[in-house]
Image (cartoon, rainbow, N blue to C red; front, side, top):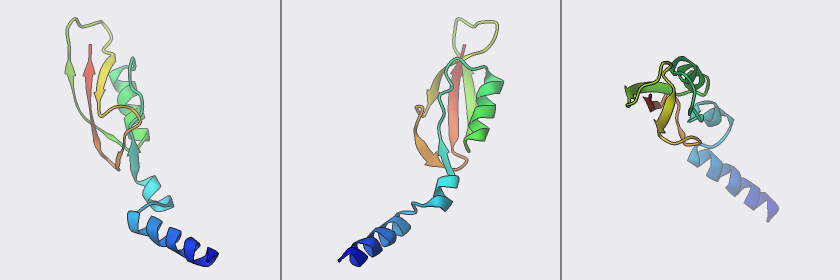
Length: 88
């Protein structure tokens, strides 16, 4: 009985793509609010994501800081998924 359950768990996780190899290829979107654009891009790269683009909002400040991001922080996406930023 225990062997059957353990085997079923292994087959299920293998079918879903869960495991060490897929965890390395995931992009977990970091929290980027209040970071500069350069720091946000570096943090995206470190977490396996890419910067899709950014847009400025008004009023602009001297140093461009991230005020919004899509998708939200904590989202789990495929490796090299793109994240869009709004900076002021």
